[in-house]
Image (cartoon, rainbow, N blue to C red):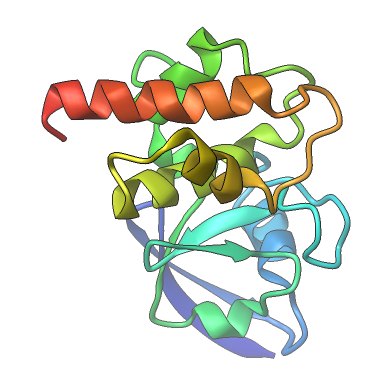
Length: 158
C-alpha cells in the first residue's frame, strides 16, 4: 500500500492504495466521482479520460501512484449545473449528448484540444476526438460541438 497525494479538481487529496490501483477505480471508489466512466479497461475507448497536468490521460491504464504530486481534473472539475464550461454547453447545444457514456471523456479531450488549439479547422476537431469511441452519435454532432465551443471561446476572448 502507498499513500498518494495529488490535486483533484483543485483540492489537495490523499489516499492509500495498492501499487496496482488504477486511477479510474480510485477516482470512482475513493472519491465518489462517477463521471469518469470505466469502459473498455484497455485504454482504447476514452470514456475514462481525465486531464493530468492539462494532458488527456486514459485513467483505466494509469496507475494511481503515478498521479502523486500531479494535478488531476475529472469532468466534475470542469463545471456543473448552472456553471457549465463553454465546451460542456456546446455539447448540449449541438445535440452531441446521446446516451452520455462517452461524453465525459469526449469533453475532457475537447477541452485539452481547444486549450492547445483555440482556432481549429473542422478536420483538426474531428481528429482530436477520433481516439474516443462513441456508438450513438456518428461523431458529426460531437465535431459540431467542438467547433461551436471554439467559436464561443474565441468570442469570449478566452
